[in-house]
Length: 158
Ligand SMILES: Nc1c(NC[C@H](O)[C@H](O)[C@H](O)CO)[nH]c(=O)[nH]c1=O
Ligand SMILES: CC(=O)[C@@H](O)COP(=O)(O)O
Image (cartoon, rainbow, N blue to C red; front, top):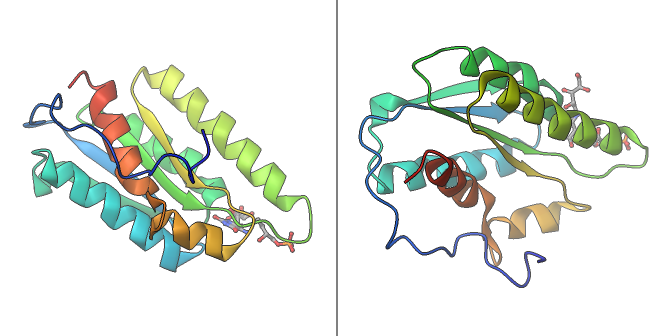
């Protein structure tokens, strides 16, 4: 279902219990910082809203979305971390570089989740334009960071 049919920030919270002492890592790409900071704040605030403690949310910055995979692995190998949220924004340019990055990140973080048997959430926007990114990072279609945090919480069984 396209984002213009389902707001990324709309979800039923009635069935989500407080997440107590669970520990989360949020790995944030620095490329398109205006977008990724908005996504990060969406994810962070959603975790806090559902009961996570500030000291149990670890942030790790990486240069670009391609580096999210290794950043996620560094966090996932810490046994105290229950779930990892990857935040990035890859905007289509003139060349096929976009395709290679998006493919590498999608497959990469999937492999990390299977290797460490823990949720590694794909909170990466892959828009064609900056406007599409703005619409999905706190704009008219909500915030994918919210969605990524809820996904992490649900994957932990709450
Ligand atoms: N163009 C975008 C990039 N490019 C950088 C790569 O992610 C990577 O850091 C580089 O290829 C070195 O390994 N990254 C984004 O996150 N978003 C882009 O739009
Ligand atoms: C996704 C990218 O790396 C992209 O922004 C680079 O732009 P271009 O394909 O025009 O070099």
